[in-house]
Length: 97
Image (cartoon, rainbow, N blue to C red; front, side):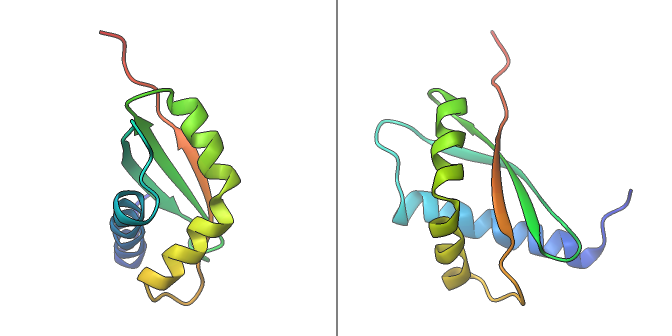
């Protein structure tokens, strides 16, 4: 299904803001998070955030899901949209080399 221009802009804004949050507000010690993709529902109720990490991406995703309310609060301070979606962090495993 083709994404609308509005959806793409919201996804890009969320991705950029979350990247800044993980760098400045919530840096992880000895680890780095990369946001691969953001997929937000049309009604802004939910956002699936696909992430990778240098170390143990499953554990990082679990920790972020536990803190998703606080991360949503920080996100609301960075971007201005009608409704801040509920965030769900989904780990994307690294391909084995």
